[in-house]
Image (cartoon, rainbow, N blue to C red; front, side, top):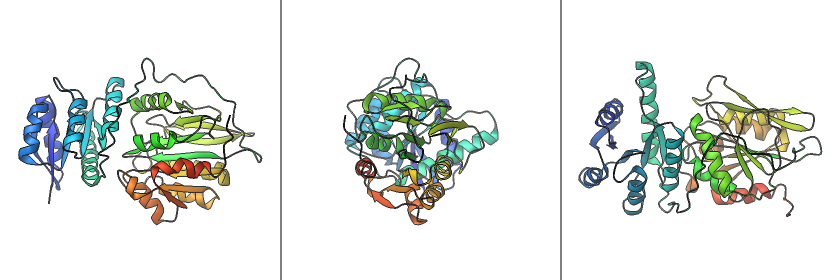
Length: 358
């Protein structure tokens, strides 16, 4: 049976384009297209779609207001369709806090090949949304948004973290669909003086700085977008810059971050596998790996390499995942040592190297 989709966008041109792209998938059909929130509400009742694609910015009742009401009264899988600008990024991240499953940019008619690639990506996100576990009670009343130049690195608040023979462990984390909220839940359990944490979240380049800045406002450790060349520091979380792979290398007793734009791995740049493979090679048993909710298999092989190199490894459990894809793949190949609810992961990880209170 086909997945039934309702398209909601204020632009008639975009409604037609999205409908045509979605209908090209053999297992997905557009059952309706609405131009505003009121029309969408009527169509939801009449058509009973499985998944809704929602424009971020709409006149009248905007996308966020509509999503908030929808998730409180009639929860259903929603994929946000966003303009990849800083303003669009901020709004989209708020939508994920309110319960949207995933997001994608607006289609661009640069070439038929690019449109085909876009259609494949959108179809995959719709399929994942149809099977996603909804976070019905995840509505956030405390949304923090960074203003100004979100990409500017914040000043360092900690000394470089030694990782030599006598040094401490470093945490490496990867996530995809549902990961923005999962990462936040893990980081909210981390103290200000936690070990360094390096994170790959699948997202475009315009999103990573805003995502890091928002986390920095609510978490005890410093959270920043990695710029490349940094010496990792205690009490600091590094979010991979979108459209870049993140790797690590040693320089004496210090660990440095490298950003590269080598080809995508598992269809992703940044790729979790690239970070985890680097951690296995450079850090060995001094690394701790965490794989969180996400569609696909990115990170599974890298986490296995980490475990084989002596690292401790954790996977998010199925019940707390939005999409139990990446953690499942890692578990099935023996990469995951310990499985835990996302709210328990910080405590499990910190138990490996107790952090002194200050």
